[in-house]
Length: 509
Ligand SMILES: [Zn+2]
Image (cartoon, rainbow, N blue to C red; front, side, top):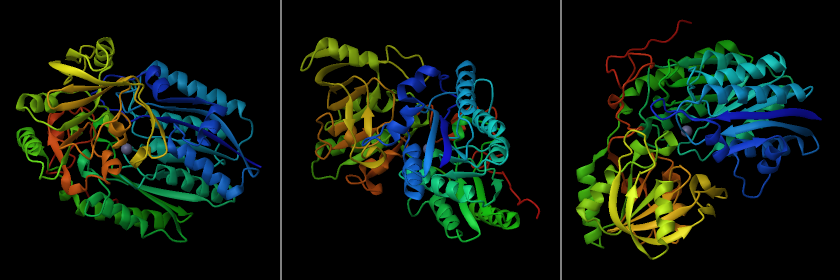
């Protein structure tokens, strides 16, 4: 019977967003002990899908009687700011207590995001991994899964046997990567020695250039890496990283893990890094101005023969630490008198409360962002009508929420001029058409759809909006793909495409 500990800390930190604390993790997902196993095996799990995938992978590899999960703690937050020091240290203490009480272990699976920073350190993920290694010793396999937006440190490399990164953006393969980690775990427990090599490039790709669909440079590089998997190469992970974390460890990272063939790991990692660097000029965003976007939306509302379009606000992406409530696009749509537009999801618990006070079908003066202090989250007042009040609970059908339980918190559908706005109480990005349809909103009939999301929405709207009917709008925000908009403090410089003169030469060997 193989005993495997399961734990993780999952946060993508935007250095420019307000710090996050225990409450952010309790809201999104804080599972302790057996809650992890129960949730991982639930019909519609709410827990991070890597955990679900790891359980199903282990069950498939060894059978339920062949391994014993030793679940410790899994804490995940919506992407937010740096994690607060006190809470983070409490979490480390929980990990330590759980692993110490666990008794002898045959392996540890860490379901981590990898893109966090803290108010007191650039590398909280490295601290988690180092703690695990210190407690279990050098011989117990430790495998982590990472979001492809992870920024990898030396400490993370040293403490783990294998790091498995996602290969899909939008992240539709989280569960598969958890299952892959299980298969690799079984191989390591059988005696295979994993050796890895890592190369980091001075390339910090703007968020909207990190798509993995055909025709995108990052996807091309990942697919090239996968052609190298063979009996020597266990895993090729290529992480585009998360710019807004703003740490010295930022930069696209290639990790090759071999079956104890360090020379091959190094040669292959360098070859893949060379291919990535040769393609660097394709990592430059091309967005549409707000004025052009609104003019287009106006035309769509007036001419039913034009195909509808989806407008994305990548600069206010809650999936990158944005607050999900900036009003640049909304205000411009309202002032232009755009019709047939649906807009969501907009994080504003105070607005939801105003709608609840008014009641369904009642008119009221909507006052947006009265409870918000973050930069860019400007107030906006507009006459409105409550279309519907809802508890915000549903099961998703599309994209990254397919089959998953989703909770928006108390929700209000509010009509403001020709715009139907979905206001929510739990901050998150709009991941699929479910976020409208579950509230009774007709997405197919809408002339324009605006989403607060950088790119994960693509997986949940691709049955309605192919890539050529998606417009990325260039507005200010905490997650603007215009990297020149930010006051960077810790990024390694020069770095491409921020610094066009950035150079890189392969390490010797
Ligand atoms: Zn990600």
